[in-house]
Image (cartoon, rainbow, N blue to C red):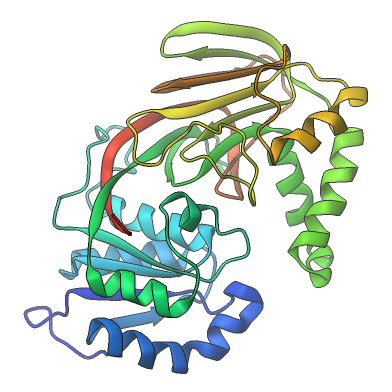
Length: 330
């Protein structure tokens, strides 16, 4: 499963996040690797060692001639791998046009995360055996991605990143930021950590004054609770922010929660998991190809992508249709 020269490079490279599933992936990897090799044949692999490592590993794997990258982990691992694959073509450079990856490159996944939104959105069945069978069959479909440009956290310069599931600004980013700033919460598990963070943030978050346009048309100017660009119907651990979004479509689903006050926030959040917020007067649900969000204050509104807080407004999002082939059931 390793040690090949570039000329004799195996087609498949596997990026494993050993910390996913609460560390169970790392403990099970010796067993999983045997099952995977029996299913798809020989491959090379590496275990991630720090946040962002999967991006570097995927970038190097593509540069070394690998054609299929399999991510073993959750939505965050998939996001890092996708960005590494596309960065190999220079598409994280803000001056490079966002074009699809070459047709001979493909992404595979074994879901070992907690939310599992990406796996569900591409129709990946549950269970290690069945997911290996999907990889063995080798059928792929071209999926769309979202491409976000935002202010980077270190220097404020324009920064790019692709997302596979969700890019959002507002209260959702503040919740993620609260969890990241209080790592002790994660000792009690992700569900408890995010529940505590959500309750705290719902009561304390100040709606952000912004200006929003979609596909070049002004939508609103004023305070908002949340702005989300969705690349599939399920995001954020099963919420249906944009129920009609489709990872295989050419557009993204946009959901904007307006100036929603505390008295109505709990009611809104209780509806998100069923998609019953669609149609509310204070919620905009629109499909489109481009979103621009400008900050109208010095609040430094946070932006998060696939669960990671990665910068601040201003934010530009564009749909990249058929950006990358993904291994999934037909």
